[in-house]
Image 1: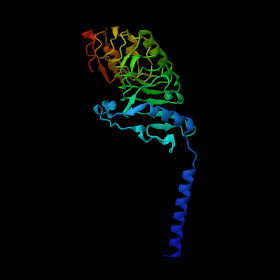
Image 2: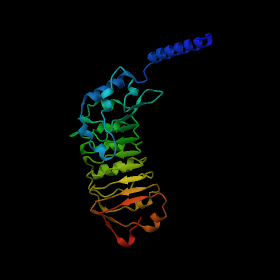
Image 3: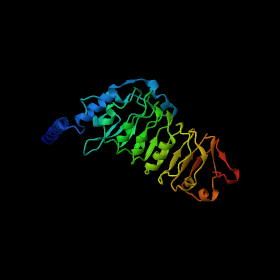
Image 4: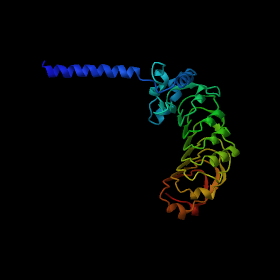
Length: 282
């Protein structure tokens, strides 16, 4: 081996060792308190593949995301965890289809992650947990998905405090929402783009104030009744409207307004009373 070749080899070896050393001495982005909170949250659950059985119905794989969580690794590198690259705060937690089975109550360490912007706990098994009012403390939350997680009981009014929410999915649970809280939710969540409350027992009329930004409004199987408010016809960004199987709901669908709308792509209105001469065929 010539002198130049030997020099190149030695340089490569040196750089490799320097990189390995520097990587091992880098400070962790995730602070210890967050790691502890996440591990405490993990310890409240068992792993049960049947807890995420809905995932296969939607072509998603389920696996135990929390199984590799441990203190030997920066929590910002844990499966399902995303941190702000500057502050190190945990800003996203995606434990959908993670086979978790257990209870979430107001003592959960989940609520110590105060900087969360996105939270997805869908397709898990938290029965008979209720949605804690403490969810309303996630003031930075823009995305909340608790669908098919076996939550029960009344949706707390504190959910309407999440003024930055852009998407809210509560479908597929044994939940109820009183008329007053339903009105508060639609009135206060002015940034909402996607709302799915399918199968939530609401048994109310549809409030007049719905987010100007809404693109997807899904209220199927909710027990809505009365007349469709005219305000729905004037939502400029609405693309999908699903009011399926609300047997006591009725209303007109003005052709002229929606035929000229470029945004609306689909309407689901099976089993609600529509006056035929005004029905919009898409």
